[in-house]
Length: 378
Image (cartoon, rainbow, N blue to C red):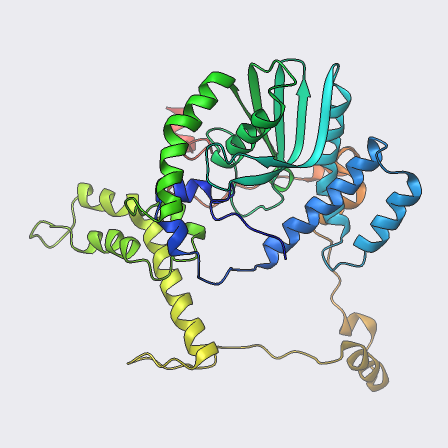
């Protein structure tokens, strides 16, 4: 069984912000999701392709490995198309190296800063005085940026610990490739600045986290914590809003609405987590919550064997047009089939992008602010 570090790089944002959370969730069951399994599979496929491109494995070995991987339910043309973005980027990076090395799926030890800390760098590149780590993120649910990303920063500290004695590295680059969001972002930092961050910020907080000490701190980093469902600190922080000393008036004023808006996303996530936790115990363990009961939700009828349904309808005398509804494949499916360049060449003039539904978000959101036609005219 693969060993997981208590203070893993992937969960570092959480334990750096909330040190005691690492021990709090230590004995809680690990959450296995289809998204995590899909991400792991994507990394395996990418590793095989890159090793073949750089001639680390030959054609027969490549075919053997891909034959094994093709049996997975995650193996789809869509996955291959998206991974091609990362693979092409990675191979281009490797081929540009003049005087250095490229390592794929390299184990990195950053225990100098984090007790028992280690992780795996998807692609480690060293070229003269520059070290770069490229990290593949296959998910599309949450956008991941390289700027101030603690996971990849810890990987770089581990790489420096391993290779600094062999190369005169003074600058590091951290790149995150998230192909399903069409995103490649990079942060560049001087080695001395990164080491200072590791020594003065990471090290003391990691020591607290390893001991289970320090202050609990609730926030956006709670999102994937295994203790998020019943964490008291998180509950207290969200319930503070309910306890706000609102003015004794019939209507909320703008200041009070703004206070709620600033917390509403986290409050909704917290409420959903509480509901998910209670439902899971009721369904899986027979837990009875006073005042609540399990009921069946609405469901739609469906055929158990569509092929036999079609055969019977043909025998009954219905035509193909009466049985089937023909529809055009989606833009995404057709673009994937033709390729972006050919799709734009053939169908580009027939594609429009209607205005999306207006949504109120925080100023830190990277999307451009909407201006109404009236505002543009004025």
